Length: 298
Image (cartoon, rainbow, N blue to C red; front, side):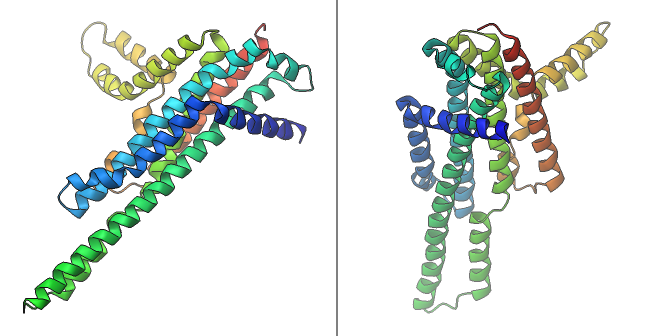
């Protein structure tokens, strides 16, 4: 019970501290405004289906970009700033364990990222609803125009067209997409916080987290290439690829938005497996971070 109170208090303080930083707050606001701008950029497509596909892809892309930037910036500076301001020593003189301190900070970052994800999801819902209303009005106007011109409109086709528009805008597959995107961002934050317990430089942590994030999207491609390796050293290559796969998380597995754009169904089991993968990887990273931070000389 005491541990939960400590972590909750530290998490709340971390959220407040991060939001006080003008750069992070501005970044979050820009991300929300850019997500809302999907309503404007979608006008460059030529049909309702392409409109909805673009809006979904665009909003998830904005969430990923802004979320990863917030995660990297937050985790890169959170420990160095505490050490520089010497506030960490004040906190640790109280009945607060180092691992509680670290988990409290990480929980605060996760809460901030959850708020960002929720806000962009809500903005996307509004944009999709506006687009749905506009396209349905266009369909109704076209059929009314045909009727006024003396033509007999096909009401069944009109019904199918409206149902297709609503199906595109009220896509339940976006729920697992946002969930997995959030878990990918949280995993990135865990990588950054783990590195910050080892390094003392804010710049080094930010750069290494960024490089590992990029590498995480290339792991699957490298693994396929190495799996087809031939020659006398193929066993060594496969051993190396397996080791890299264990160290660097496969972040490309979280990109389910590509499946939606392609019109493919997303099995629930597949979503659960990827979510479990992300959660387990995050727990392992945070466990290692807590162990290292607990034994580190401050």
